[in-house]
Length: 353
Image 1 (cartoon, rainbow, N blue to C red):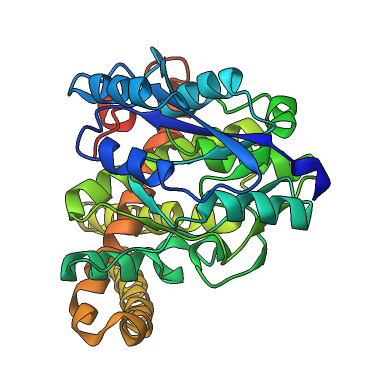
Image 2: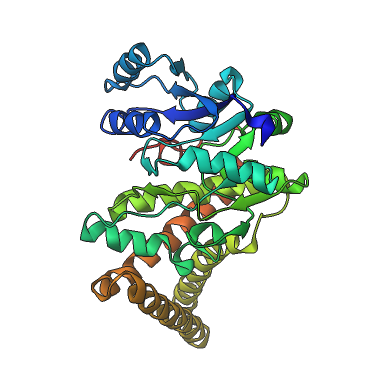
């Protein structure tokens, strides 16, 4: 397109204590194919204490296209807003330090944005099968049963979606929307896309936009991540008065259903209402059996694609996704309904890898 001649593309990146990954990330960005555009990289550092700041400063000194900003707010949304305000480009590409990018990632983002006329574009990150553990976690990550039937988790899907990973926008679009919500520690990308679509905007996912995401590979870290997602999703729903998708309610309903049935059985037993207790236990057993059946079917479906050796591990990962999100969601309901002005517990605020 003629209007793309020597345009400036701004890459905005949140960063905090990423010394193990920052060098690889910067090399990946500097190795991006350049089309008919200039490239700047604005890294918002959340006051890192592990040497990341010094590493970024050294890169910025060697490469004038890299700039570092302070992010005293520490969280991702505050960092991205700070970088957005300082960005010089008319197109913004959001990138993440924990992700590896194809050499044409930025070029494809810009091309798809121009070709589709969408307001935001992106691609579904693949999970590199560098180790067996990563293959197992990647199989769960791409499973519709684990994460809901959202097309943004399908790397082969091309078309309109309700949200997309990372993103590429015209700067004017982000400024019109007011940037990201700095009240959110998690779910800030989804909330931004929700505002965009409810304002009439369009989001496009393309299989041409290729990157590889390094997910959490322990049950503990995965549980904490999705517990936070569930917790902050409640605030997003509270803000917009309606969930972006009803699938966001399923893990919370599953968790509450289990808790209610167990409590009902215990109350019935203590109160001498044996028939009531038995009925509650039977309903609970039915719920667990239905879940186990669905989990088993989903595990077989995922293992067909990612290897049969992953099969015995997948049900445990699925359960971790659902229980973590559900527990976080229920905790969010309690917190935002009863103590909305009190700082949430550290487990829901601290971002750790």
